[in-house]
Image (tube, rainbow, N blue to C red; front, side):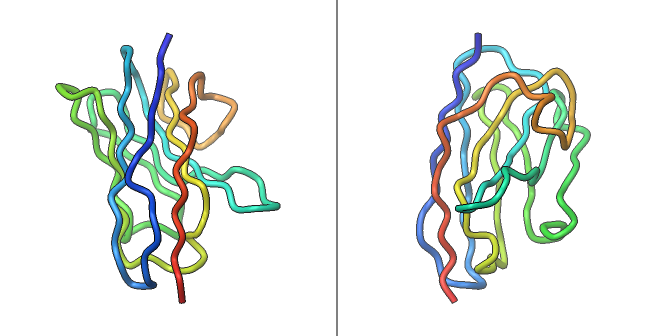
Length: 119
């Protein structure tokens, strides 16, 4: 069993930065970040392999967001730079057996943290 707790969300102006953290209580394999805006489906943002060597990103965040992990701290991060209003959503971290952009491949989910980007 894995428990995940996100933190670091907040209100930021367009062009600003935030770093989200996801602290895990159990052993994790691949980790992913997803986001969901009101009235929209939850969408893939980024994923990282267990070792941290492999990463995948949603096209619209490439070059702006960086996913990383510190396995000694059992924590995964999402560094978000050059934020845009369309990045506004609740951001969720998730754990799964392998890196994937498919939400149904993940086994455990955090409660989410709100990110709001003002124009």
